[in-house]
Amino acid sequence: MPASLCGTWDMISNVNLEGYMITLGISPFMRKIALRLRLRKVIEEQGDQYIIKTTSSFRNYAVSFRVGQEFKEFTHGLDNRHVKSLVTWEGNKLVCEQIGEKKNRGWAHWIEDDKLHLELYCEGQVCKQVFKKNVNE
Ligand code: ECB
Image (cartoon, helix red, strand yellow):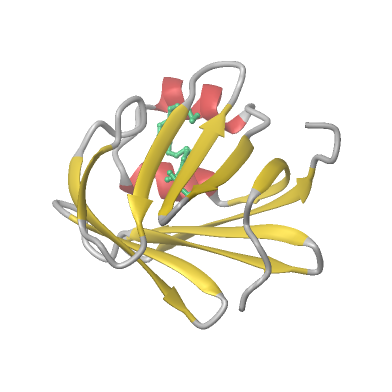
């Protein structure tokens, strides 16, 4: 049983968000804003459903899903694309495949050294983010 992803997590490192955003076609102006954000993840489990909220002072994004059940996702406020997403456990990693216009797109979350790790990938670019648990929230 993998360690729980649930909780409130604050970003402590962010590598190659720029490359990831370029592959998604995000404008230079929006990339500049996005790169300055201190992102937070709030992950909840309600029954067999996961809710992952990404929050910031600028914009929020939320997705909810059941593991193993394909769903339609609209990346509202990100690159605004429609994808078909499927989240599965691969060992200790919660892995999402996002099928759509962009090839090899998805993300993976896992816990390592009490930190929440995230890889966001798209067309050969990988953004790596690490989050520290916020015990006050
Ligand atoms: C949610 C605040 C980000 C707002 C940035 C605004 C414009 C930039 C447009 C696209 C940037 C792409 C990604 C930004 C980084 C993180 C957003 C959520 C990434 C994601 O898919 O998280 C997954 C895994 O935790 C759950 O949705």
